[in-house]
Image (cartoon, rainbow, N blue to C red; front, top):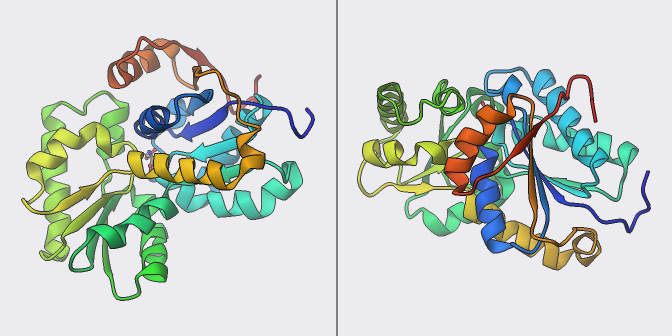
Length: 282
Ligand code: DGL
């Protein structure tokens, strides 16, 4: 194990492509740091998997990123944040290395909602796992006890993105259907959180089918601001984040497939390396 004051890139983890929507905004705001992105594309989507499986996969990814030198890892995935973050923070980190940190995306998003909603009726779209966990309901009601939260699990949205179908006609059908189902829960919803990092890749269709006047909350900016603030408040961690402006990509699927969508989305010709998390191959 390296020494405590050794430095390393900031790790960014998602089940697949979704975390790129967070990474893009983080890099805009904090371009000076090095980043190591890991997408578990071969096992995505995580959205319908059980708590135990999401926890196990997420812990494997975190350990892998730690083994590559990351001191700080962002779970750029709501499903992993909902199902694995707390256990990793409370049970695993103290054993693996109490000086490292793992942060999620739900809490920073929830903190912003009070500034956005006018009537306190909040819709949340996410994977079935995130919605069933009730993480958004719990966190929102801790900060805003009078707010009403309406969660709707979108079974296929992340799968459409993972299978490069975000621009297809199938996406139209499912985005319209799920938005209608959400708005039928409460037509007064004035704010909808995109509680899955894959969903900004469907933003054109979401904007097309969302009723006018409803505010759509994307997490990328919010998480980037929250990380900026975290690094200011934690100079001991900031010192351990390597600066060089580099970004590397790891995927459990084929690097060519990953590169195709990631390059288009990031507007950069990236290259990715294949890894096998299950074998903990390094
Ligand atoms: N992007 C992830 C999230 O924010 C997970 C999507 C999935 O793998 O189902 O929830």
